[in-house]
Image (cartoon, rainbow, N blue to C red; front, side):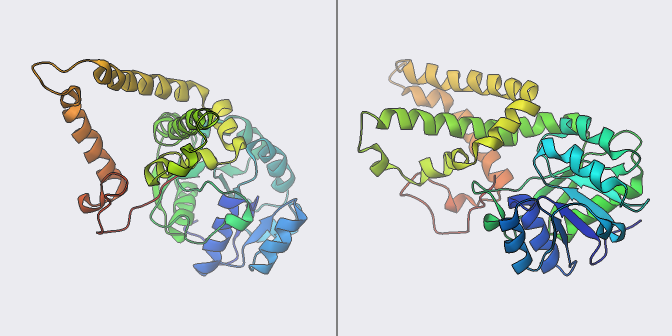
Length: 312
């Protein structure tokens, strides 16, 4: 088993991620992609976009090398149980869930089928097939988190799937993955919700507040526009590591509040005490985001060099 072939991938669930995967594979020449979707309206839209749509798993899966679970996590065991009897012995099942502890209840449904959990670090605040786009995974990391005893060639298949849509596969231990995304994905959602929430409460007595929203607020609070169901998954499946990350953030934020409240010493402004942290934070953001220093700046002072990357 090495790589994937045209027509060899099925995607269960054609929302933002599953739909984008189907579109990306089709655009890259790996179609036709089989899509399993219970919503008739979504099936119609996907069919118009060139996806081979099905209302439920069926005999078409016999010709598929890979089945990707992109339906809601709680639906995955049922989908996999229904698909199991159709899949070929060398088929590989993977998923796109942002918490790999979900493997704990998906894996039993595999029943002998090779299951390799994975997670593309891609997304948007919009949901559904209407928000899907073929370039969603381009240049993005795609974590591959094999379970103990997973055959190496099955891992290779999932890595090939990620590369086929322009992503960069990264093999990680499932628990390490869950801890890291708590800091890089789930905590940002929590922070964005908190920022949008406090502004919403203030706007109740300050009606001009929404009129003074700038790009900084919109960028920072972007994830607050995500469907609430997304955050519920973070809280439900990654509570332990999200709580750890949230407490670390509160400790860091409390330091900033303390400095802000402290009067200057020897005529030194209080923010001077944090300049080293500011530089460290800035350099980290530039390093992970591919943003050039020329483009950075506060609202209304953005440079003209380069195009900033928007990440989920």
